[in-house]
Amino acid sequence: MLAMHAAFQLHHLTPADVPLLRAANALFAEAFADPGSYAAVPPSDSYLETLLAKEHVIALVVLLGQEVVGALIAYELDKFERARRELYIYDLAVADGHRRQGIATALIQRLREIAAQRGASVMYVQADYSDGPAIALYSKLGVREDVLHFDIEVGDTRPDVRARAHVERLRQARVGETVMTAEKMTMAFGWRVYGLGVIALGIICLALGEFHPGQPVPADFPYRTALAYAAAAFMLVAGAAVVWRRTTAWGAAALTAYFGLIVVILMNGSALLAHYAEYLTYESMAIQLAIAVGALIVFAARARIDAALAARLTRLGQLAFGLCTLVFGGAHFVYLNLTAPLVPKWLPPTPEFWAYATGAGHIVAALAILSGVHARLAAILLTAMFASFTPLVHLPMLLADPSSHWSWNENAVNLALTGAAWAVADSLADARLSGDNNR
Image (cartoon, rainbow, N blue to C red):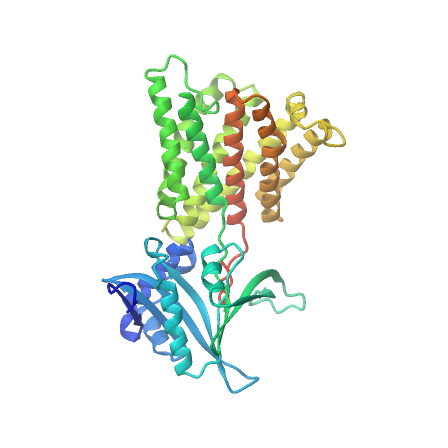
């Protein structure tokens, strides 16, 4: 029972609690935004019963009525260097609406009691740099330590077995005789940057009472102004839904439908029929398609859908984004006379050099994403390049002429494209390896 609220109950799972363990898995899937690992291939009841019967497996949940609002999974490890044991906290999560109520602390405290009863000398858990709440929680319990961590793929026995090394900050917390080394999942931020970009688009279009330039609507279209406000409000609300974890999948689905069907097919499709000989038409369509693709990839990552379907949607999005990037690169060469003047004159060697270089960078990144060769590295570098356009190009133009509607729109679009590219990079991350919970 949690001291601060009598409605919460802490429960140590037994083989009879398989439904609660499944609910804990559902909580992990939502909290870590990783349905592929936690919900795609659920184990059988007999497997989970056997698992919960094992002494070295410790599963704790916090209940609010019948709802699992917090969960912790730990493993007891027997050591070889001394006759002692350690407890490793593999997963720890609290439902979004119940955080900052002491639930995680209570789960850890209960595990400490179990560790003491079993004579364990150490409890440890990992926390990634980007997981602020976990870092704040574990920092209250002690100091931290830097280590090198390696994931080695199972099944490759060649001498040159591939190992992916990354530096993670682990914290050790000493409370009495218990040591806690802290960790949690890697949070990808591309979806939030993407959502903020769409919010910016909505705010600007709402302020201007106009459709975004990439969403062409004839001037004499019935109720055009009202529709422009409606579209702007939709982007604002849908973008906010993407940013809010509980509604990310819904917001992403809505944006995929809007940008994919209405903006790309209806609006830009009509423009393409009228101006098919102009490269600018294809570039404008590619921008809107890239925004639609960003939403699709976020949806595939966040929605509770079949893992195979999510993988297909993700790959479709990656290929479409690669094609859009190819069009972006071509525009730098086709419209060199328009691209070069955007480059800051103080940037050596010449504006023309950077116009060509960024155009080539787009094309190389596109080919990498389409072929799958160094695709994630290409997507990361592409994200960095898009992000650099804001301080180097778009923001200075806006500051030079704050009344320019075009500059306001360009800044918002570039933020959305940066988020979309980031989401692509996140989707190309190496497959998670079991045992490290390195999400």
